[in-house]
Length: 239
Image (cartoon, rainbow, N blue to C red; front, side, top):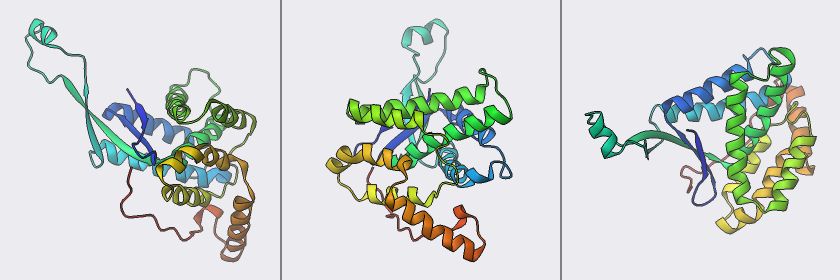
């Protein structure tokens, strides 16, 4: 079963599951976000989501963290079936920065809506259900870190704003990631809700950044999401 838990320093959240849990989520996201020729106005959000998928794919290959979780097999069951078998299963895990993870969960709403409008409107689509379960796990983990009123404001904003990431300047996620990393634990506890809201509010800082990026895009003839900004992520992150 897929699990999402905050890291010790509240730097981000740890997504963990067995190989098939992660594989199911990754494949569902690829199907719902579509190929690179679809949803051009959402390409920045799509590439951002797929970067998280890449981390999960690397985790499923054992390149990040390994956890060992009880599988429910006890001595009596093994004796009854005359089996010699481990009583724990291997879970693969990856850590994602909180602003990055919140943006991913938010942006997936747009792709689910587009998929339902243009491809499959069924309420029983298994890929949509898989992503909704992932979003619910993110929301549940986030709720545990916020005050009740903060979480309700976040949900209200999430439910009333649509689309959420249309022509979004996803470089702003890097800005928030870097700002968040440099906070101490107490500051993260105090300001996590604000970071979640800033991903949706398009405040003055976001508007100024997007304006600068649009000028560069017009000059270079590049797509908005292709323009790079100076980012200096630390080589080692204390999770």
